[in-house]
Amino acid sequence: MSQVYRCPNCKTNKMRFNLIQQVSTPVKKDPNSGDIVQQYTNETLDPFHIPYKGPDVRVQCGTCGLIEDEKTFAAFGQMNR
Image (cartoon, rainbow, N blue to C red; front, side, top):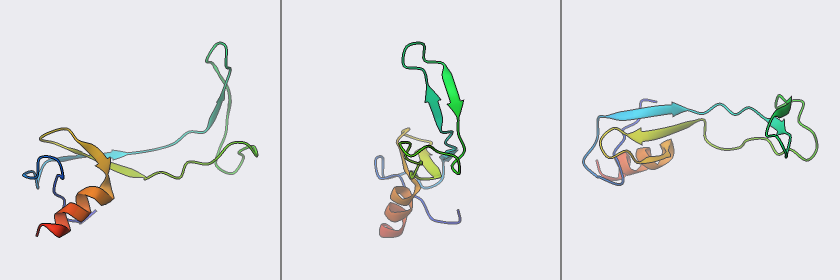
């Protein structure tokens, strides 16, 4: 987390960001009612359920509101030092 960030959209913000922690919860839903039928852990997924492989943290620019992967903000911060 001690990386330099810079917003790739507004290009001016280097200080104000919201860090969004992503926690996935694998579930099986009833297709008609939308109710959760079963909740899984990553160790107990059935063969047809792909585990979440996305980023753990996303970043939102506190100035313009852009939300992207942390890597995007960090890469733009390093590129424009």
